Image (cartoon, rainbow, N blue to C red; front, side, top):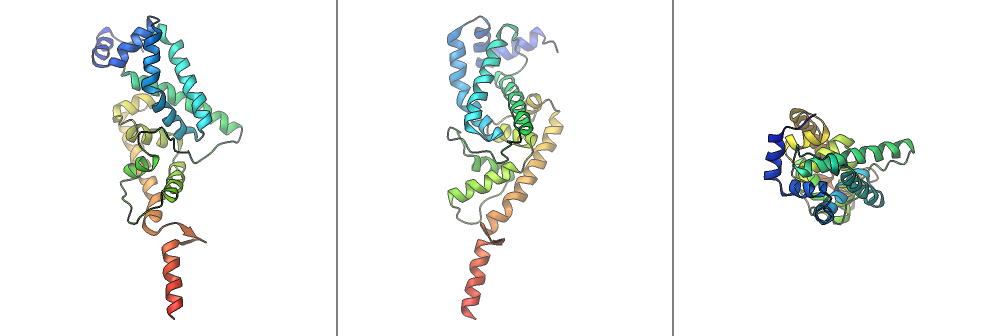
Length: 227
């Protein structure tokens, strides 16, 4: 799809990162280094949550920047730089997940990244709309959230992370994922329902012990001791 001059000019004026990328197009190495500094940790965090392996995410982050550099000569700003960059990241992550699936090495529960500006726990709870009804141990919460995030399909996980982690609008997420804004709205709604369904029992009752919620099990033991 061709990009009009007016569109390119609009994004150039509005987005300082677009202006940096245009300098990269002119072979400015310092501009490329600046973009890497601005986005490396964000990309690494997102990719780690998407593919579930920190070491793989590090390799994929480098691949994303390599693709950006290779595409510099043909770059024309048709979107915010972050939208363009995360579109590339989404494609790279999808390719990596397909490769993992073919090798039967898929890890369903992504691991939280230490470099994330927000914790994965906060992202999942914000997306689900739930609030804890009891004091939660951090390790327990992390395990429960990883399981909940892992229950989402790839598209739902990507949409949730872009919405809550990068604060992308429906329109921005739609552009990254090649879907309509209305479809993204529906996708996020389903993701929120799935997260709520996965997290609600844990937040209400606690970890499971032999198939019985921990707090319920404790109550049953107390009743038996008083009989």
